[in-house]
Picture 1 (cartoon, rainbow, N blue to C red):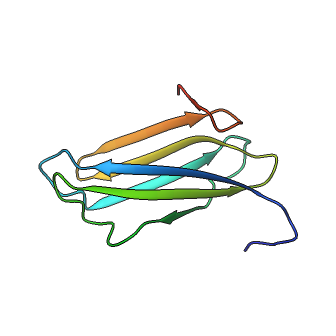
Picture 2: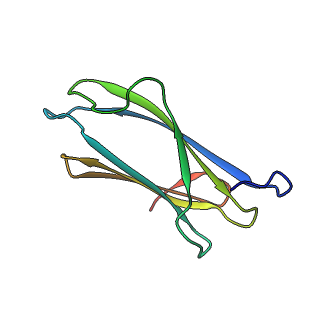
Length: 101
């Protein structure tokens, strides 16, 4: 539950997924990791229209938003796609700049 009296940070990432495989993407799991030792960060997502399935050759745009306490930051984002068994991972600095994992 959000409390408007307590300021938080918001981390947004827009992702465009293009299915270059020969199979539908039927499942899409995503997670943000808290790099300050706390639990996995609860993440909201925004999209227009149906998100799944993503047929071969199709693309979908999704924006993920993570809400954090002021002393937290997103250190890592990971997404997995099925049935392709493909995992996409990106890492970030405390300022939100992309870095190597």
